[in-house]
Image (cartoon, rainbow, N blue to C red; front, top):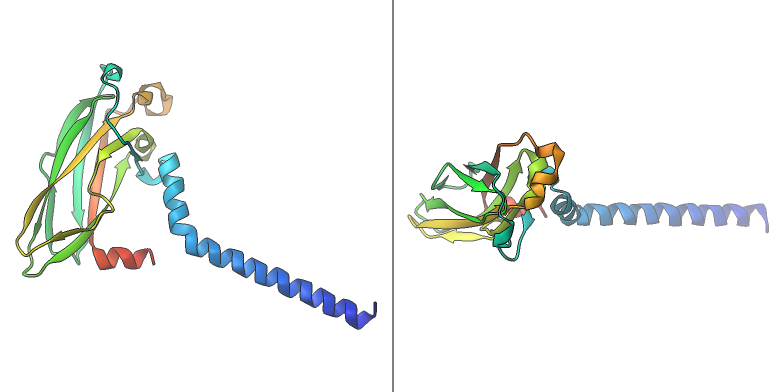
Length: 188
């Protein structure tokens, strides 16, 4: 093989490697949000909770109690009132609880919003299981419409086996509502 042919082969390999790296980077960017959500859901990092299909076994309710505080925020572009109906509730580990948030559209137009959430301290999120929730589902409210939004949850009994959360007596479930278009732009 001539020197020129070897150089051509090396250039072709370098080009193929560069294009491969660019392709992998584009795919990572394109799938970063869903991959991050899966990672957070699996680990509880960032306050991401677990989703339960059904309530826990009633025989697994423990005597230990924690206080769950509820927080609500609204992004400035969303003309809604949004608050928890109750500020806190004491629950036994493993016991299902049902609470409500109230939302009111304060504008003269229909507005669609979507809520994100987290649980703090973050290290407790892995044990927080939501059975029913309004998060990540678009909610359209008509002008002046008022709705109660339910959240059903329990704290996994495995919580008591984790030494890292022994000192935890309170945790906070926090929701933030965004105007749907604003939320979707973040994840395009």
